[in-house]
Length: 358
View 1 (cartoon, rainbow, N blue to C red):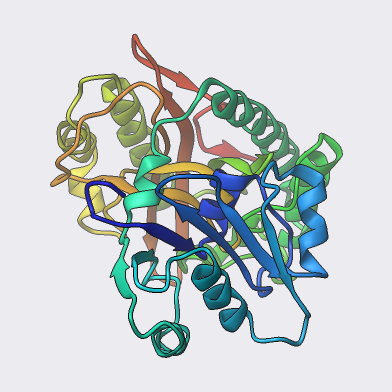
View 2: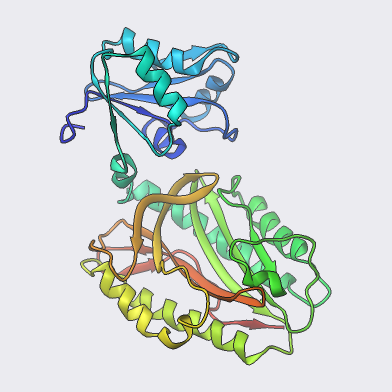
């Protein structure tokens, strides 16, 4: 805030609000805001109905409520004015704030200057504290158990719903909270469609089953991806799954403090270049994960790419992810959640990193 010359922040991003105040709930469309001054304690703004959630975990005691049907922008602007920020430089998250909301705030506070925060707050969440790391470890253990249950359910005649249910039940019974993304289980031809998921599809001979799940502990997620296939398995599926495994393994070997993210990505790319240029691949070798709310568990705008310009540091945590698809035919994927430590890295997830053939 000092570097950007800001007097106060108005945050609408759920993760940023929770990170700074501990406030959370599961109703994503309700209005919440955190007003964070350069000096002093933050202020929570929410309806009198939703503010009751502050009793569950928020340490923030400066709370402003409004009636459920009242205008939340008016309540926010009134709070800013009452606290002396009507003529201030106010940092806002343009990627979250709608054009209509920004226009309304500008009308109600005509003498204020609204400045885009971009990723300033989310970037501050990149290095995890010891407590955050422990939440991620717990989430990783839940993800691993959920994946074991999902893979055990894969068989000809079963459905993608049954596989997803096995993963979800295991994680929730183990203590997982509502996920940022529901379990992704996609079968056969649908596995070749990025971000398709379970839809009452029966698993048949020769089908690939692509699974992506994440346990969630205190809103911290640890994603994990694996692939299973039912005999007879084509060479194309085996080759793609092995390439995912090989690239991921090389990437993890390079993920250590002081390493350039771009170097890690280039080495991972070299491990599978011939096949990844033939199949669908999104180009992201890893991305930061941590505290999150639906619709995403990505917590900071940092990705491991061949042209990344940052250095890995202890406390960073990534979903190291590889996937290869032939559109509308099959898809394979393998991933781990990887914590960068003082001396290397720590895998927070883990089942055998091989194509499971049943």
